[in-house]
Length: 583
Image (tube, rainbow, N blue to C red; front, side, top):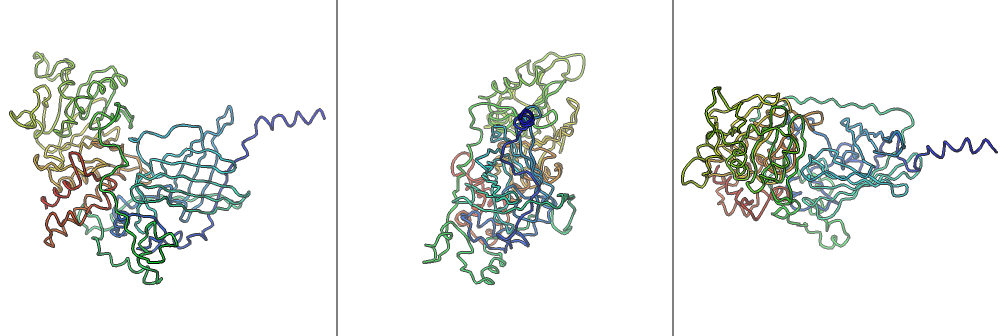
């Protein structure tokens, strides 16, 4: 009797919580077997509460798009990855001192994907943080059920036949260990862009007692179609995808039911079986308006580079021993807040300021920043070249920006202190600062004719200016010689520079003119959108349709929930008009 308490004491102190889903699990694929095997039929959206935007995007999808280099190594997002051929290894990461579970880790064999579910109570990242295929997940135990909430997901698929899930979607999951060797996985997907109700799906898993999960998926993209024009994106024009009818013809299902929609899920729909229409909103109300933030915040990106948000347009800051280099200065009203945040990063002076365009929300702070130590134009001449001894701020931009800012009696005129102190007239300029090469590329006339792209080669970060804004259609300023073809060429130029890491995620990071931090996969979605909308409007114009008729056809409907706006300085109708007139 004296021995028993001694033996039990260490067991009580070191015991783990009763809840656990650790182990290696194999899926039981009897549910939705066709979809989880060879894949669903084209045009089969039965049982999904989609809106018209999701349906149009799915009907326009061409599987040939998967041959594009940027799509070949793309993987599935967390809400979908459990529904294919796969196995999953699950284990706990514990604090070595307290044995408290800090995180639950998963290795998903398909595509070698690693997922972390944080169990330590941490908050989800801000909205401007990057999105990933697995998203950001936090979990908690509810009895024997692990409940997980995931945000910051990239755009992916609800079904592998082109039915989309947007990057606004969130995921709630329940992992339920019903018995020692059986686990149920419930997923609840909410997508304000493409669904009118949540989608709920389940999968069963059985514990694998026979071996280890050692699947690997090395992927290296190659040129598969060498006759395709650069920048082309395979897609079907609305109403021209003849493969959509194969599903309901073969299975003799009602065509309206195959088209999906929330009403088709319920028994009452069988009384009339008409096609369900849920128009997508033209204005994106799920995201805050661009540039509207209560405060200025700094987010480290990688290397020496950080992103400053809340200053109007995004600002890129490269900070190291030599000083600070900025890409854009933001809105004038936010400049003092920007300088305050920079002071927290470094006590070094600002040495360079590069403007990506002439827009006020990217150049508004030029004058204040230039006057911090006296503008270079007003400093006395030194006996050495350059301004290295004067600690003044050099402002760099393309010559078209300089010309317009210095033009008298012009809407684009600016105070002399805000003008570029040095401009470039060819296609690129380079400098070496803070231990890395900084290359400035002049983009073809897209947003304006003075657009610059800035690439920090060692940190592997690109600042794009307003050529790329992941939550709004590209602004094409025809008064400043902007044009659609220049936007497409500029986006392809960025894709040529960017190199993704494994799974088409990370690698070269991209700071857009507005919106969240991105990588190449996000830019690809944006480039594809611009090309597809261009193709549609071009086809409509060849048919002799007027601008009003094209607007009425809503060539952007499937993308409006992500990028559209009916108010503000740049609306969806203005975007359509700019494309129509520019073709």
